[in-house]
Structures are given as structure tokens and as C-alpha cells.
Length: 325
Image (tube, rainbow, N blue to C red; front, top):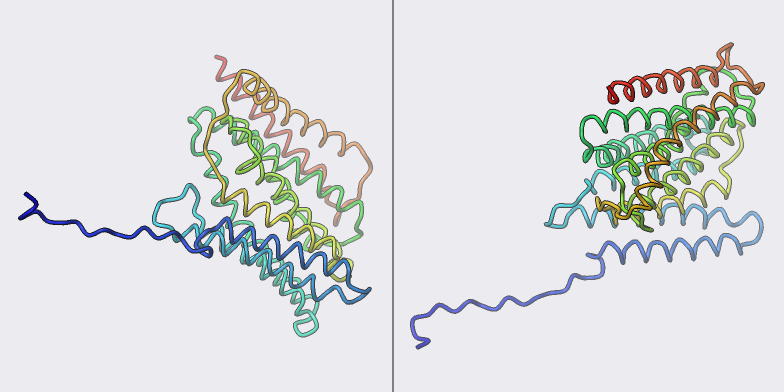
């Protein structure tokens, strides 16, 4: 009976090798980073810089490699992992360029590092923000974008005010990099508002890990810019925050999910936070504007930021009125 039938050759099922598994790559990179951090801490005074350079490169390289593995899988991913891998690689190279200051000069290495960090941040945000907003209907999208704009403008205003309070830098040119770093830090609030708007499922992964990851990396960049303007070398706290933040971001992007949260309690909490977070940001900006603070070339950056926040809040209120009608 079996005569004349074509036999289908058996195809052996091969398990992916360890370097084809992005989770293992990230885990090994995190373990190597933690080991190098321990060696840097335990090293005699003045000799830990070598290990700091190594763990910065290790953390960024591990995240970029894990994302590149995801990007080359045959099944489509939720995010463009190749773009995110390039974003992480650019920031890692930016941190590494700071070590070339003896040959490039302090100003040249700082400028190149800032440019690479900016490019990496813009590349990542161009992928993450559409992923956060693409599932909203047009009316909700307008409201979410206004709320996100309020959070971003308020965050930049508050961070810039705190930075100016600690630093005596002069000139509008020196203000651009702190604004960019503050925007990266404040983007965490924008992401949180968007995630709450479309009711992202609460979990210790994905979006909710990306928010603290972006905050840590942004804080690291702000601290680095602060010491660079003062003419001081990169500190251990800056490199440690960057390495930890970039590993958290890598884990967040690799576990990204569009799952929607369920439950009446979560619905109430998310709705309340979406309503009150922008209002709280407006009140904080107004409070900071009332406190004495420095001016830059005669320009009150805090007042300008507060004015933008107030204008966005007026537009938000107008949209609410139109929707009610």
C-alpha cells in the first residue's frame, strides 16, 4: 500500500544556539557588567577607571547585540529592533569617546559624545513614541499628545531649573545640551502618560521597565553634561547609572508588549493618573517660576518653559470642552 507514495524527508529540529537567544546574551552581558563594576569598586584608589571603561562598553555592547539578534529573526517583531540597536550603539560609542579626550581634546571629545548621544536618543524616541501612540483613536490621540507635551515641557523646565541652580554656566549655546538631556529624562513622563492612556497592562517588563530605564539614562547624561561644563572628568556615578539604565532599557525593549490591562481598579487608577499628572506638572512649573532662579543671557528659561506648559494646558482644556459639546 505504501508503493507509489512520496515520502516527506524528516527535518531535524535544531535548538537555537546560545548566541541566537537575545535573553541569554543580555543576561551574560549584565553578569559581566556587574563583575566589572565590582572590580572597579574593589580596585585601589585611582585604578578603577580601566574597569569603568570596560563595563560601560560591555553593557552597551550586550544590549546592542541582543537587539540585533532579535532584529534578524524571521518572525516580525513589535518594535524595529535594528533601529534600537543602533541607538544603543551610538550612546555607547559616545561614552567611549570621552576616554579619547587626551588625544582629541576635552572640548572636541565632549562635543562628539554629545552629538552621538543626541542621535541615539532621537533614533530611539522615533521608534518608541509611535509604538506608544499608534493604538489610540484620533480623539484620544490628540488628548494624549497634549498631555505628553505638557509632561515633556514641564519635565524639561524642572530639570533645567535644577541644573541652573547647581551650575554657573553662561551663554545660550551651553544651554542646548542640558535641554536635550532634560528632554530625554522628561520623556519618561510622556511615555507613562501614553501608557496609562491606552491602559498598558501593568507588569515588570516592557513599557513599565522602559520608563525607569529612560529616566536613569537621562539622569546620567545630565550629570555628565554638568561635570563637563565645569571642566571635570566623567564620574563613576555617571558611568554606573548609564550602564544600569541601558541594561534596563534593553530588557524593556526586548519584552515590549501591547497587552491591555484589565480590571476596574486599574481602570480607575489609570484614569485618575492621566487626569492629574498633567495638572500636577503645571502646578510644579508655576511653583518653580515663583522661586528666584538664574537667568541665561537675560532669558528666563523657567518662565519660558512655564509659559509653554500653560499654553498647552489651555489647548488641552479647549479640546475637553469641544469633546463635551
